[in-house]
Length: 172
Ligand code: ADP
Image 1 (cartoon, rainbow, N blue to C red):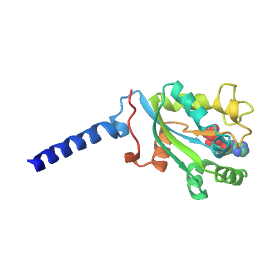
Image 2 (cartoon, helix red, strand yellow):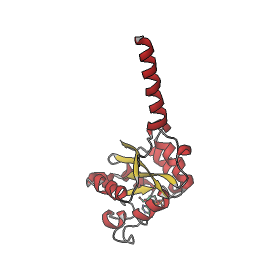
Image 3 (cartoon, rainbow, N blue to C red):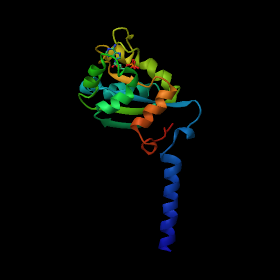
Image 4 (cartoon, protein in one colour):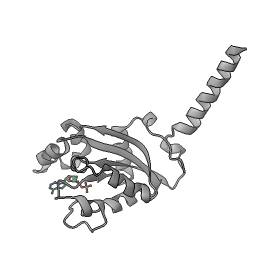
């Protein structure tokens, strides 16, 4: 009797877990997208994580994955592969490895383009006030935040930093 109760409870638990807690992107509704953001070392050093995440939450984004980690050159060579041959690549590596970063997956309608709009252009000097880089960035290198450029980049970048099982689904 006790054993039957236990296995029923276990089955219910596993059903809740697979249907409720974890979701792959293919289970999301069509308008929803996921994008990867990195709060760079200067954001963390200035204790801006809460302020920046609040901006995304206020715009309706849901946080579905997050970790704090210290990046290293090999992962930056992948993440910034398009910049490896640039003369300033060394300064990107020094900056991005100077202290831990906050890596997050944000989910929402049209999340990829909307997040790029909210962060503003690469150079804070030309980023409008009200954008994250315009408000908090210092220069072309120390510009506070990364957000995936497009759909292809978002998928690659999310899988670079997170296993499927580390991402939850948004609770509306
Ligand atoms: P974004 O981050 O806006 O997508 P890029 O992919 O071109 O822009 O650049 C990646 C990062 O490399 C930038 O966010 C910035 O930190 C750094 N970076 C880009 N261009 C320069 C530059 N000309 N000089 C110094 N650092 C740069």
